[in-house]
Image (cartoon, rainbow, N blue to C red; front, side, top):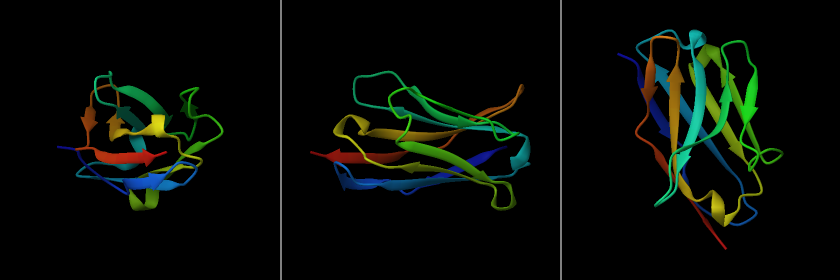
Length: 115
């Protein structure tokens, strides 16, 4: 069973940066499309960024030019570099690993941006 463990969340002031990491274990990392989602209180979970097995990336409009997703297949890790953070980025961020037959989620990491 795929296991995902996120790290790197925390409290930061507006304009600051954070880097989230997610390590996948118990499977072959390179075959997965990896995504970062977030859920703010009272809101639905939304896609923030994703990177395919081939390295293609996709971003929510709200984070384009501020966030960057990358993967390190040798370390079974996906990163989300978040720059110029805004209070509206405050949410629990979840890592997702997906193939045509697998859809796995991490436990989430809290990101809080103060104004």
